Amino acid sequence: MSAITKITDLPEYMATMGRRAAKAAKALRLASGRTRAAAISAMASAIRDNSKAILKANAEDMAAGKTKGLSPAMLDRLELSPERIEAIARSLEAIAALPDPVGMEDAHYAPPNGLKIARIRVPIGVIGIIYESRPNVTADAGALCVKSGNAAILRAGSESLRSALAIHKALVKGLKSADLPADCVQLIATTDRDAVGHMLGGISGAIDLIIPRGGKSLVARVQDEARIPVLAHLEGICHSYVHEDADFKKARAIVFNAKMRRTGICGATETLLIDERIADGFLPFIAGDLLDAGCELRACKRSRAILPGMNKVTQEDWSTEYLDAILSIKIVDNIDEALAHIDQYSSGHTDAIITENDTAAAQFINSVDSAITVHNASTQFADGGEFGFGAEIGIATGRLHARGPVGAAQLTTYKYAVRGDGHIRPA
Image (cartoon, rainbow, N blue to C red; front, side, top):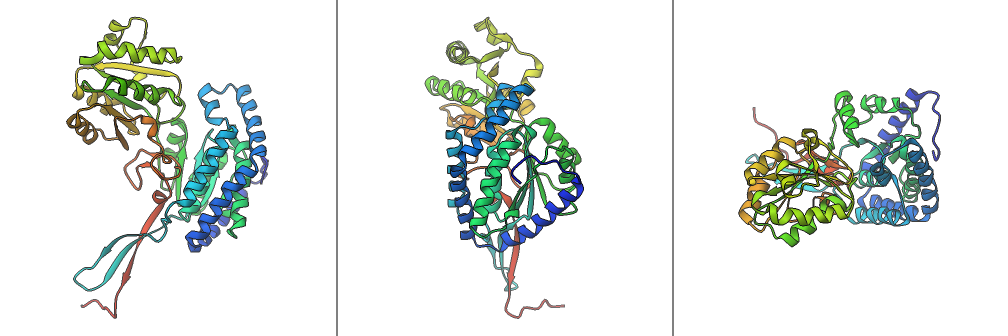
């Protein structure tokens, strides 16, 4: 479908989608890696060829979003441009060029009984992905699922549905050009919120895994209501800690980028921690950089003693994902206090230390229990593309199945292939 649709019988619509996805998953599982890569490359070409239609659909979404009163951060996530569409196409090409994860052997075993055992990566099956205002997720999720041999059922947010439908149309062209079923990637073409409930119920066993990508309320609903496995992407309450042995020039550039490169992404730093031994010398400079760029600073009492003009931080701020040009600042006594603060308030997404002290860096990386820990780099590198995955479906903050950026390899499971030569097990 290429337009928002009024569904008269939603249960049947979803059931049909589930049946088609299950059938398409079998076709994908048997397709060669070369075929799946060719489909994704064709998707990239179709994205470029249909860029005008995608931009037109996005303009309609943007106009509706402004009328609805979406925040600047949400509008930034929603907006497409020729440059962003080209980035989507390049991302798909990067996914196509990745090694095929399906059929890869993780390990070999040769137990005393003489059997030869291999652990082999295989697709999960049908993956349901629920996301909100980012239209690029349509392309990234669809391509990553095809690369990993999984069928996808996508549910875009109402704010981005026109854009998602236009992008999905290009994905289908790519699938067809490689002689793969169009049902390998399906997009729910209605804003009916009850469609999410059907997905969380698994559509009568059709969906094997649900991935929510969006705000705290969406993820909470999915985790509370899903009757199938969930790969959760929680909010990004990310920290940057400037240690006493930090290089000031390096730290200023990293912190500024971590906050201001794109404030509306989950890898943006929301809290800056500064060691008290360097606070007098470092804080005025980084605060000046951020204020000049239009960032609001909410600071602790010790920080405001150095720069009284900053706003007062509240307890709630430490637990807030702003997704905006707002930063909380706290001066800490030492690395132990920084670690204690992160342990209490981090969402387990991405946390960074800036220091030239390798011992302190090792302590930080070993102590912080987040999906991604960073030394001397911006938290905004928390991205599957930057990790070499081509793209990602999200940053998994849980501990089971996958953690950190979820790319194609992370969308596979495994089975064991056991080879013998007439082996029988003795009584």
